[in-house]
Amino acid sequence: MQRLKGKVALVTGGASGIGAGIVKRFIAEGAKVLVTDVNEDLGKSSIQAYGDSAQFLRQDVSSRDDWAKAMHAVEAQFGGLDILVNNAGVLFFAPFEGYSDAQIEMLIHVNLMGVIYGCQAALPLLEKRGGSVINMSSSDGLEGANAVSIYGATKFAVRGLTKSLALEWGPRGIRVNSIHPGGIDTPLSNPQGNKREDVNKAYARYPSQRAGDPSDIAAAAAYLASDDASYCMGMELVVDGGMTAGHYYAGLPGAPKGA
Image 1 (cartoon, one colour):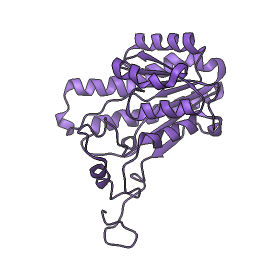
Image 2: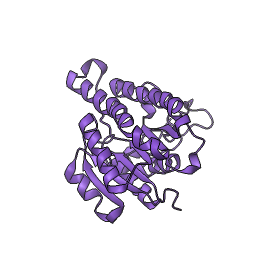
Image 3: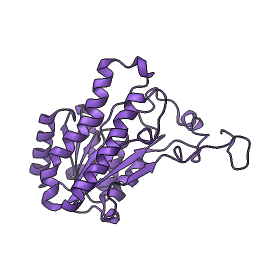
């Protein structure tokens, strides 16, 4: 199934993790993709198997100048833009009072300002032929959690921004939606590189009974990018294995052993 045939996408943070999964799925669906990332070596190697279907550009999403370069590159190389995936992000685990100024600034500049700059930069191209914007929020953008207070604040902001843009841009032919991953096993969420079987144990208290994969998010992104989601605007697509569905009463019927 090639739901994105003839479409051009830009995926930030596309060299690894969720971003790389989205790039792989989009290309399988027929899209041409400009992959951007701050890690140039990893970015270049990540697209080698895709031939002419993907190009790479080093980009710091917190830089307006880099966004201008990205728009120039996608238009020059692929002729325009149909799909923007604001996926790049950073994450630090710390108690609220333990966040340094540098960490706070990086979280805000990358996770929030990067999305704002990206949407502003992409609007002229997207408006030419209509399109889809997919902003990567988080399950931590739906409910509070310890050790990720500042990260969560940026993801709540992305969630709110997405809804406002859906209202403003929907009448202009641009759909804006957010994806809320939770429990996805990536280098960002699992920096220690723990074995998958150990990672899965941490999710035994949730309905999925396992961690998710980048491919789970990629499938959601492919849907939102496609015409199948033509009536989805301002949607919060939660892909978290049931983490935010509610809670179990341990020891009562229906609760798993790990609850």
